[in-house]
Amino acid sequence: MNPILPKDIHQFMDWPWSKIEPLFQELNNRPIDDSNVGAWLGDWSRLDEYIAETFNRLYVATSVDTTDKAAEQRYATFLDDIFPKAEAADQRLKEKLLSSNLEPTNFEVPLRNMRAETELFREKNLPLKSEEFKLSTQYDKIIGAQTITWEGKEITLEQLKPVYQDTDRSKRESGWRLASERQLADREAINELWVKYMDLRRKMASNADFPEYRSYRWKQFHRFDYSPQDAKQFDQAIEEVVVPVAQRIYEKRLQRLGVESLRPWDLDVDPLSRPPLRPFEQIEELESKSSNIFHNVDPQLGEYFDIMRQDDLLDLDNRKGKAPGGYCTDFTAIRRPFIFMNAVGIHDDVQTLLHEGGHAFHVFESAVLPYIHQMHVGMEFAEVASMAMELLSAPYLTQEQGGFYTPEDAARARIEHLEFSIRFWPYMAVVDSFQHWVYENHAQASNPDNCDLKWAELWDRFMIGVDWGGLDEEKVTGWHRKLHIHQVPFYYIEYGLAQLGAMQIWRNARRDQAQAVSDYRKSLALGGNAPLPELFASAGAKFSFDAGTLRQACELAEGTIRELESIS
Image (cartoon, rainbow, N blue to C red; front, side, top):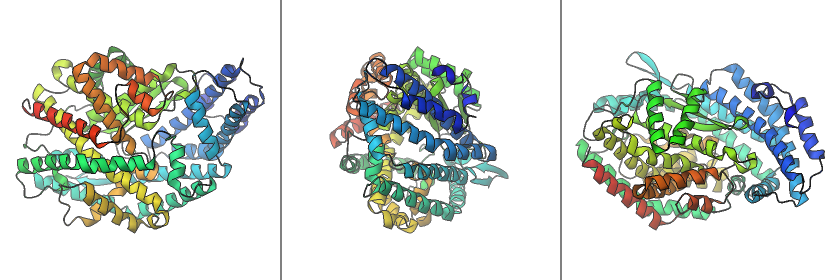
């Protein structure tokens, strides 16, 4: 079957369904038994790889330029004409394999996932999924079009980030308020999208015979190793353990800045009024110095990154019309990752590239697995790959190691990262708790005004230490600016769980960096071929929700911050 597929994925991307369908039909008609199931799986996998890569490449084209009408139309055509039919055909092959009772070698976890997907599948949900993808494109367009005029020049809100690091407080406030004003101008547009999202998700859950969307989504995410109650336990542990640590960080910042209250525009500036870290001016410098860092962590990881540079698998600079955020996706047929981000010359850009580099290394390390079905990794562990890489890279940020900073500035950058990591956990708990509330109260949450009220309530519960007085509208609409809530619901606790795993890997690296990196790489090579607890254990960590493990991580972070402060 493989010779039928073109060697060049770009040729396949132009195929209509009439050329793809016979390949699925042949697979469905082919008898399978113990002697040939491996070859059959290989042919099915290769076809799915081409379809997955087509999907990802078309999506990338819409995010690198949200104003590209042709790219948007091509993506929409795929979602309408190919995606639902391929999903339905894929489902028939899953049912064929499951009904055969065959158990291919090293395929236990994929079979478990297929059983769940088969139970969830409903033909009438396919056009709803396509519509949901289109709504996400509309969200990207809204956010991507947000610009302001700053010092006589039109800039994106991402390009405003360096202003938040300026030592002139009035300048920071002015920039922050301009950005907020622009974001609030899209309040109604995002609210309208939200109502459509909620209606679609209610229908999808109902079509699949689920009483509510959360249980549907939980199964869709293959969350077999923990429950919604475990997630809530984690949020409660964060409130108990991390919120007080974050408060101490905010209080220290308040004292060092010498202000009466800490405001939202005071969170990114250096608390000792030192000039902002400016690690690079050109994207080439970001790439080359990041390459040096990755080579220092592990020569093979550095080689992986260099392949990405050579093969044009990076789009790192910010520009008008580009979708927000950063991500790493995979081009499955060629077994290569692609990194997208919005760099503007600040340290956060370095952290983002190190983070997405971890995802990219996951793609490279698991590329040896024979079937696409073995590569679907739970995001709880996929994010360990990225967050651990940030911490494993930290010792190599200095210029003498080929990185970006003097020893003093490297220490300062690491302090920023560790403090941000602690501050992140309470924010994650806001996002996660908000999503549980949304889908436990679907009708109520379909009214955006109620979402505003709930977000504010959770914000006041977890985000203690920053004064939002007089900024009520900006605070209550914070959920508008977290794309996961809109585009990938329930995808956020993964970051919190993964950060806890990553800190355990970092703890191991402080004792033996080489062994910790070796364990890290071995765990990535497993792909999705093991349950979450085993993936974490293979990396030298514990898959955990408890306050005790969180407390150990916070103590390690706070202790390291104190060490680094003696250098910075």
